[in-house]
Amino acid sequence: MLFTAKEITETIDMFLRYKLDIRAITMGISLLDCAGGSGAETRRRMKNKICRAAGKLVETGRAIELEYGIPIINKRIAVTPIALIAASSGETDYTPYAQILDEAATELGVDFAGGFSALVQKGFTQSDTALISSIPSALALTTRVCSSVNVASTKSGINMDAVKLMGEIITKTALRTAEQDALGCAKLVVFCNAPEDNPFMAGAFHGVGEAETCLNVGVSGPGVIKAALENCKGMSFNELANTIKKTAFKITRMGQLVGSEAARRLGTSFGILDLSLAPTPAAGDSVARILEEMGLEGAGTHGSTAALALLTDMVKKGGIMASTAVGGFSGAFIPVSEDEGMISAVRAGTITLDKLEAMTSVCSVGLDMIALPGATSAATIAAIIADEMAIGMVNNKTTAVRVIPVPGKKAGDWVEFGGLLGGAPIMPVKDASSAEFIARGGRIPAPVHSFRN
Image (tube, rainbow, N blue to C red; front, top):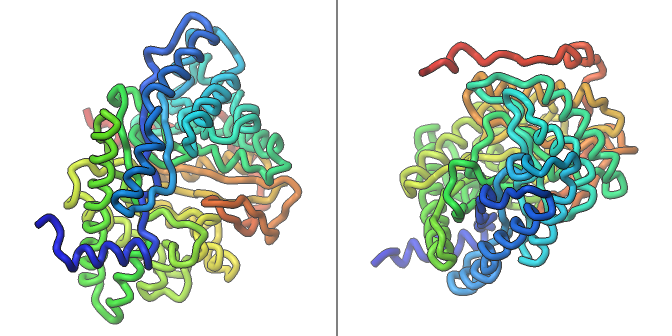
């Protein structure tokens, strides 16, 4: 017997009571063979291939939901970074590529399409520059397209010219989508050490080392972990860690089942399973509440970084034991707007931008879904990015920044994005200027431990 009656009961409880779900199934699609002599031809090939490869993705996801009773929240696609695909066209405005991605995603019925992306950790090509300059209009004129730019890596250092540029691009994107409270910025992420097999938006793209197509799965279950820890009152950290690890193991097995079955039905390979405790605005689905269950009065208070380190590591260890294909980010996300416990902590004053930055040294990603005052300068945003990139570079881990300067809003105001993106209070930034530092340009060299050949 594959599962015992007790295990089946536990799994049903995970779904019905503790909000366990498959956060996303994401089909990665290589578009390398779509590059043509003209932009129009390239885009025609892109749409044909995307629709052909992912034509049954939504249908398959829904069938698995019905047959297994497992919620699959989002069905998504991710493509080869468009800066690579559009390079041969000679065009300087890549907005039409985003629009064709959006058109294909709409026809397929998928929730998001990732891959309007560029990799510039060491320098820019002309195509990279064209794509990045097109981001504000691309995100303003589409509804399902997500964009990402990798500006740093442990091996290459930090491209500070790209960091400066992304501060400006985020500001422009906020202004272009001001009527939607800068919603375009919620679909834009800046990376250090971006993974090439990530099923989570806004940072998903299909890496050049990936197969022609593959199916990646993102599993989330913060409510399940919190429920398990409710039975650990007064126990030692050893017992706490073991409980998290065992629970993560059970969650991962479920994700492995769904991913393998979806890939089989779609006639593609199963890529990776990303076990990440990705919260939602709903009560009972919060990473912050897990930290509080460990014994902290509020997320962000002293001890939060240590608690998050334990949580992230044990989730990864439990996942690795349950699947040979754990990848992507895996661990725990700490977005502000998407986590009701984090929002409460911001309001209580235990979570600040500085504390969030410290916690990102041990979490899965970085500064995520943070609303900033609309008057925040491009240089300040660039400096926030630079700090986070430095954490990723030095610690040889993925870090990211997804900040949203909301026009017309000031610190303490509330902004609502809706759906999984939630809402958040506007967080204050430092008044002292970083403009002279950012204006230097050039590259912050890679750390000495990056030299490992």
